[in-house]
Amino acid sequence: MTRPPARPAPTGSVYFSLLGPLTAVLDGRPLPLGPRKQRLVLATLLARPNTPVPVDVLTDVVWPEAPPRTARKNLQVYVSAARTLFGAVDGGDRDRVVHGCGGYRLRIEEGELDTLRFRALARAGRAAGERGDLRTAARLLREALDLWGERPPLHDLRDSAVVADEAERLEARCLTVYEDWAEAEIETGRAAAAVDGLRDLVERHPLRERLRAAWMNSLHQSGRQAEALEVYDDYRQLLARELGLEPSPALAALYGRLLGRGAAPRPAGPRPAARDVSLPADLRVFTGRDDELARLLPVAGAPDGGVVVVTGPAGVGKSALAVRAAHLLAEDFPDGRVHVRARRQDGTARVRTDMLEELLRLCGAGTSGRPDAAEAEGAWQDWLSRHRALVVLDDVADEASVRGLLPRSGRSSVLLTARGLLAGLAPVHRIALSAPEEDEALDLLGRLIGADRLRTDRAAALRIVRACGALPVAVAVSGMRLAVLRHLPLAEYAARVEDPSAALDELVAGDVSVRSRIAAGWRDLGPGDRGALARLADLAPEGGFTLERAMEALGCGERGAIRTVESLIGTGAVTSPAGEVTAHAALYEVPRLFCLYARERSGGGAGGPGAGVPEPALPFSRG
Image (cartoon, rainbow, N blue to C red):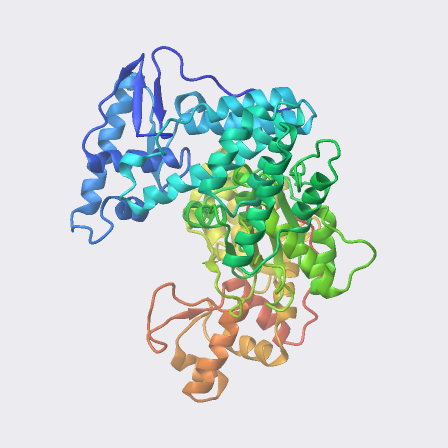
């Protein structure tokens, strides 16, 4: 059951508002928020409450053109002013603005910020509607809408592009909640309450079909049949003139019912209950990845939708990041979040038609009979164009398997994870995951074995992390193993995983094996890439190599070596520098455990026990 939203802050607490100009009130008394740049920083932190905001983002907010040399120091001054403001409110007993590896995070409660209260009311209203309590749903949704002022959110700071983007996201959420409220009022027979507001919103958003459908229904229920039919005709002409399209089958069906003068129909294309049945549960342990989440969430949650590709080697935590992001974006996608595996249990790639059928079934968008590929793709694209959903396609093998699944129109988003780079997909936003920093890996290990045990021999724990190459799946398996073997000293286990001949045998916990995870990536490689990877893995104990060393190991010229190394980068087996650098100056790397596996296979071994066994999902962030 959804908990009721918190009330605004009680006496003695601060209450911030972003749904209009940026304001803060304490006991009915407005608080001074300082000069404009200081307010820009505060507004950005409040727009992403309880989430790290990277320093680069804050810099772009305050100095969009050319930041001064003192930008970072000036930001520290503005953040210090925010701390002072909260210190005066809290009596100096709370650390509200904290700094970590992901940036600055503002800690704030639901009852202290109008946008958090807006989301809580909207969530509770939707939950009531899904239970069938439409009157309660309409009341809660109306209460959420009443939090909005007469002016647009953050209108006094919108000359900053970053703040303007955040404000547009808020407006998009408000629009969706208004549609929810109007449909609830219509279904309870109180359409007259929504007619005028729907007309105004349709004038401002003429291509938004759900608004059109609600307006048609409200007019029909109010006895204004001719006007309801005219709304459809205007929309049909607008679509034909602007986009060369016809209204969706759902809206056309609504028009047909109105022509039949039957009982007041339900809204066209009713928004289903959130289809999250296929989304894995939120992760019990999730550490780090603040920077990646800060880059991923705004793109995936953009009002107009987006496509994000998360890439990286096997075991680096791609799926965990995608699932975490999907849970954090729940409020942005009222039509649900759908998770589909792009591979079968044996690790082979699923064909596109197979995934299409699953998507149509999960979203309730199936066609009669067994459609051919073109019909299935058309039905899927039609559903995407009419809904606001987040689709996670996990562990994609290649571009061909997902072409036709990505949205061509509408406001849905797709989040793909893949070992390879999927370079043939464009335009998409890309996030490449590498092994986390050692501190993050230590934090993961400590959560699994206990912070006290880690503190007893932090040096040995660091040796374990480094022997794992900080690869999340390897650190997690080490933690699970050590959590069971309580008698085993950390130093002794560190010595075991540091031994190249024994490391992969040690990285097993029950039915979870690091060797099996790496083997899945190995199976994706062609014979030529496997041989090249094995030769490159012999270059250095830790897998680092230059282009010149690669030419020597591969026995080829510069062009051939570049093509081979770039091919391996494309598969995720070799990592490259994050910044721009010439091929000759770059230091490439095969992660340590991948080196060990490649050497194992090149030596003619069978790959160790369980090399071909599918892996169960790990119950933590780094699987």
